[in-house]
Amino acid sequence: YKNGLGMTAEEFLQGAEYLLTGAWGPDNHDGGGNPNVMLCVRGVSGDATVSRFPLDAAWIPYLKRKSHLPVIADPGHSTGKWWLVVDQSLALIAAGAQGLEIEIHPDPKAAESDGKQAIGLEQLLTISRLGREIFEARKSIPTDHRMTPHYVDGIAPAPKAAAPAAQQTI
Image (cartoon, rainbow, N blue to C red; front, side, top):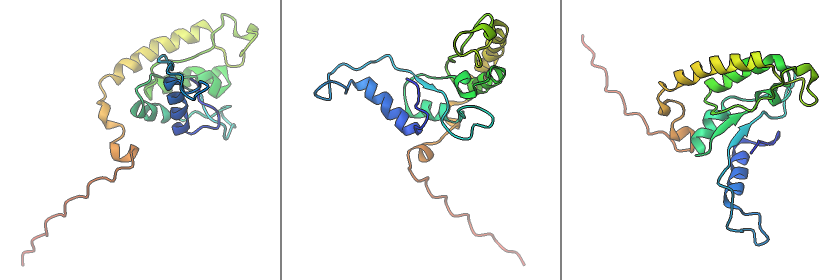
């Protein structure tokens, strides 16, 4: 399930919930649903001076924290430029993306679709090699360091205990 270009992260999660529950039948609930949903971040509309649809990498750990669904990313769609795809892919893996959706063509200039954002096999091998190293390095990061519940869920943090009064010597 790909995010809409004007969606907030919360609207994206609500859309995924709609797909999971199957609330699209004539009675607004057909009891089915689709258990095979993954979230694909691909950027939002905004300042397009650098990339076509800026992709905030912070969405990835946020969505992973708020959902049980796998989170993948589409670096080519967001950048719109083949020469940014390798760097964007590695940054998204570092942010915690569990997969990437990338347009690949043996001769990207000859691609009939998405040629401006398609990469060649050499770039794919670079992403694969370096991406695996980044992915493995992430395994050593504690999962609870990213966001604490009071930031995500609006729970106020517990007040800090007052520091003991300083003793003064004369």
